[in-house]
Image (cartoon, rainbow, N blue to C red; front, side, top):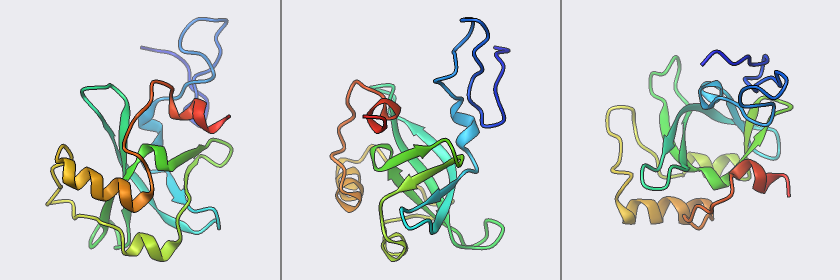
Length: 144
């Protein structure tokens, strides 16, 4: 594909050809910051995990702490717990900074089995999400 994107990764409206301006490439989120509602930096987007059965985004893997990736902790944050803040090119997570430090996490060499239902239940409970992905996109839900 050779569709044009703007500086934020949003597809440019090219006269109704291509994806259009309401979509952006998921790869443009990698490296973006995650902030809470108090504008505190919580971490950085490392990966976006898709649910292979539903085709929906399941988790954003966020890295926090460490220096130059050494000693950083990874967190699988449910997609529905995040809001895309396109005006600041970042993700928002409604959680206190000290709760992230205590969140269930893992290191880059020891990823959890994300298909494990008890692991998923623990993560969704921690972030206060249902774990059920609806048929509408998260972007549509955040604009309601």
